[in-house]
Image 1: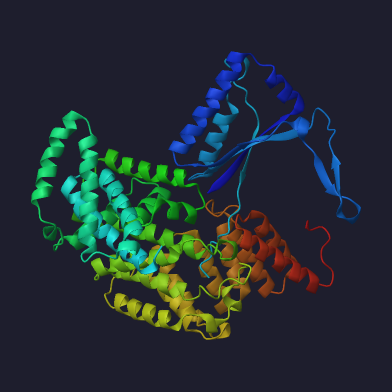
Image 2: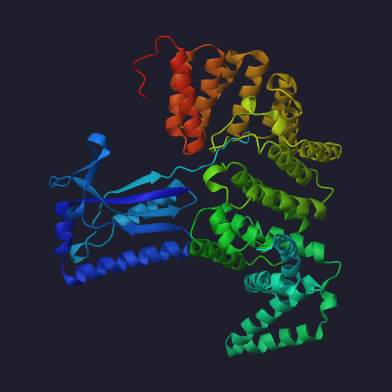
Length: 131
Length: 420
């Protein structure tokens, strides 16, 4: 079963992250690299992408005659998707374990970040029914 | 790739791997070597023609790869390798095609469906080592990257190695349990293929056809086993409806609405003949019963002609054999068809407290159908919507939402409190 693990954060949070010390940033990157390697080695990683910063985010709606209307000034408190992992695992519990590991990545001084990770099952094109 | 060559290679894969494993006693490395030989053949044969003895060719190329592998091992390993290499040079190729071939293939099947493997690993390994598929083909069938699938296969082989199970036929006392695991893996492969709707995935490998091919070969190896025959019959009698069960856009068409002229009559005959001779052996199992149920459906030229009394009797037997909640669910449907929807709804209530069914969309979907049969449209709409919110299958969700919408339009005053 496939799950998407979504890491979310605020613009303020991202700005803080950008101000981390070199060693903290390196420790965090090393953590992510190891996590991805482990998920590849376990045969579970389907996809992983990081998204460009919330400063570039736009919300687009269809205006009159379908022309795009963009909106780009967001309150500091708004949550943004920062990146996602898609994993193919044997059970929901395994997806939660991976999410917890992701959430517990090292922050400043090596403390656990405990970032919220939203875990959602990905729908499939299968039917359980052998009709 | 050239289609006849592709089929030939898949057929030969386990027949080549068997002797190579036997000679070199290293399942994991031999499996890699055979894959390389298959890839080499897929490139060369279409250009240069199929060799006179294709199997001997593959064994030779795989053995050469094995020797290269062994030579590249460290010096301690090299001394051991020398013995194997000498032995293999001395052994003429003809010696390899002997009466143990069938046992070889069966041993491989037991190995790949080893109970210590997770279902997804066993499936991947079986498709590659016994089915002769490439990692890329298996990866695309399961919609994961090739590197991920390669890793899954290599871990499966590592698990087998670590489990210390020798590459040999299971002992007679563990055989029944091991065979059950094999049949379950083949069933899962079939299910994966059959239940994946077509449409955007038309190019996906036909896993259900692959499962049928594998089940056929296990049946050839164990012709007297009634459950092996039962599983093959179940696959055939279900596959019969493949062309009728989805619409042009991959939308789900339930059994009652299918165009039965699209059902494969030849396959029905084959499945029924197989099942009849399996049932005559006298050891009735769950696969035979499920095949019998599929056969009763297949024999009805119109949905109204379905012999539900017989299906109910078969589910009664199946229920005694297994406490699977899906069996209880299907039994309730059959009971509703025979004794009316209120009987079915009453049986469903037993599942409400079953933790294995809690939150499962199938329970709500069946309840919706039975409520609709009973004329409780509002209750049915509600249950269709709950089921739609719980399923993880896109075709099923679309089907359930459509059912709720259809009923809402036909109901004069839809309940405004039901969330859309």
